[in-house]
Structures are given as structure tokens and as C-alpha cells.
Image (tube, rainbow, N blue to C red; front, side, top):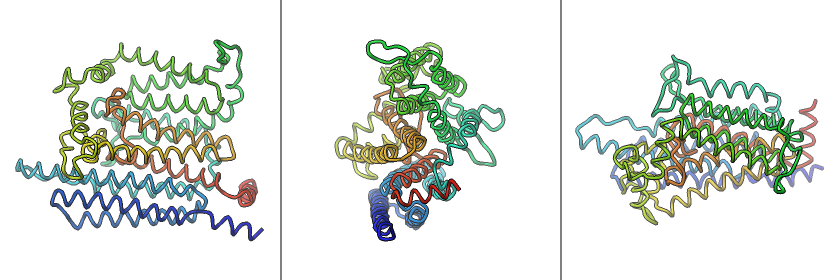
Length: 458
């Protein structure tokens, strides 16, 4: 028994995680050096930031090695690598803003990259906190209804008259004690936990078929209630907070989780019908939705007005071409909101199609490893939770990059790990922490798993 346990300990692959993490850090350092070399700006603060990021990553790796030794060795390094690339791009845009201020004889703005590094530190602390507090992901099933209530409160918190405020037409932010925060980013985690806990209990009932239409099993009318409730909920988000992206994200996540829980294609078909119906209603009822669709279809019809953002984004991609202009040698600051909504456009100009393809492959790796944890875990709740959180990352990435490339209408979400903003970065690192905990249970040897299960049960 001891020999078997020792053999399993050798295969934890934490050394592989360490090697990948060092490679991710060196990639971020290389990008930062290229920016400084091209722009002729280098500072002690930049190198201090890079060193601090490396120390934070190393400490996080140590906690993973201690708290989740059998966790997936690829998830954290790839997520951290994306974060470091985002830091390099934000630094590049800070340099461009400083150069523009000098040329216009205006005060130099405070660099945002240092604040983003602080949010990275908070996000990594939250990741380590998840691994330390949640010793078994099945503990989260006990707070199913609490998570649902917390998620609803957080999502609609910006509607309060004192702390909530509107940014770019969407009421998603709150202002407390000098800090601004987007509570909907944490709400997506809480509601995903609620969806997983609810569906794992109701999955057999929701999978029942009353009749078949064209060979597709149709659920009983009374079982359509949960889907209709989520549909109405997402419509409320669209109406009250004017946030198309979040409403699409929540509805899409619930449909995917419902399909995984029941295995019924009919839920996907019903969900698609409801999505088309809500899109039609939103287009006819709300002017801001209609503008987004019109800009998507005819961006150059109003290139200096409503279509300015997407047109500048397309120009940036076109200027980048196949291989890009190179770090620090493009004009990414000409794209509005380049640090947040359109950071992919900024990266597309300086890294080109080749660089954007590489970034997309990194996201594919994160999604594949999350889905692998969902398939490998031994309990239905863990499987649903992992696939739900993975779908959150996948859908958000698709919605954002699809919007800036004009594949779909713009929605205003941020690109996971790349974009500037603390709310998104913290929530995404929490998602990685939960996925690491689930993958640790999935990859843990049966012998160790049985002993731990007995401890938890006692």
C-alpha cells in the first residue's frame, strides 16, 4: 500500500507545472522587453513589477503543490501566461498614453499596469484562498440555494441608487469606499454553483420525455419551468441593466449545463428558439440593442459615429496582417477602450493573425483542461460545476473576440485574463481555483480518494 501511494505521488506532475509557469513568466518578460526596446522606455518599476509577478506565481504554485497536489498541471500556467501577456499590452498602451501626453503638453497619466498587477495579486490570493478553504468541491453543493440568492443580489446590486452607476450605457458597477467593482463577475460564479446544485438534483426529472417530434424527445411542459425562469431572468438583466453580454452569457451557460445534465437535444433546440425570440424582442424594443445590430451589419455606414469602435478595431487587425507590426510598433491606442473591451484588437495589430491564433490556442487549452476535469470527476455535481465554469470562460471569450472581429454584435464583456479590470481578473482566478480543486479530486488516486472520502464523511 505504501509503495502504491509513493508511486502515485511521483505522478503528481507538479514539476511540469513549475516548468510551464517559468516559461509563462519568461514569455511575459520577453513581451515587456520588446515593448521597452521598441518604445525606448524602461524603468525600475517595470522590472520590479515583473519580478513581483514571478514571486506571486511561485508562491501560488507552492500552495497548489501543498493543497491540491494532483490538480491539473497546465491550467494555472496557461491562465497566468495570458495574464502576463495582458500586462505587457497594458504597459504598451500606458507608454502610448504617456507619449501622447508629452506631445500634447498635458500631464502624464498614471500607468494602469501597476494597478492591474495589484489586481493580479488579489486574484492569486483568492485562488489560494479557494484551495485552502474548499477542501472538497462537494462542499459547495451544500450552499446551492445560498449561492443562487447571493448571485441574484450581486447581479442586481448596481441598480441601487447610491452605490450603483452607469458606464458606457450599462449599469453594472458599484462604487464603495473609493473602489469601483463589477459584482456581476462574482455573480456568474455563484449562479453557476446554483445551476450545478439545482440540475444535479433535478436531472432525472428534466430528462423525462413525454413525446417525440421529428425524432427529438420533447420534455414535459411542466419541466420547462426552470428554463423559462432563467430566460425571464436574463431578459430582466437586459432590460434593467442594459447589458446584452451578461444576459447572453448566463442563458448560454444554463443551456449547456442543462444539456450536459440531461443529455436531451430538445433543451438546446428550445433554448435556441427562446434566444431567437428574445433577440427579436430586444431588437424591436430597445434602441441600444438595435444600434449594436445595425453597427454589426453595416459598420462603415456610420464609421465616425456609432460604428467608430468596430471600424477602428477592423483597421487595427488589417494593419497587423499575418505577423503583426511587432510589440510597441503599432498604433493600438487609436482603438477606443483598447485596455478593456478591445484589447484583442490591440494585440491583433502588434502580433498579427499568427499571434491572435496562438492566444486563441491558449484559451482552447484552458477550456480543454476544464472540460477534461468535468469528464474525469467521479461525482455529478463536480462534473456539472466544472463544465459550467469552463463554459463561462469559453462563452465569454467567444462573445468578446467574436464582437471585436465582427463575427457577432458587440456586447461589452472583457476578455478573460487579458483585459484591464480587477473584477474580471479576480473572478477568473477564482474559477481557475475551483477547477483546480475539481481536477485534483478527479486525478487523485483511488486509494487516497477513498481515505479522504471517509474523513469528509466522518
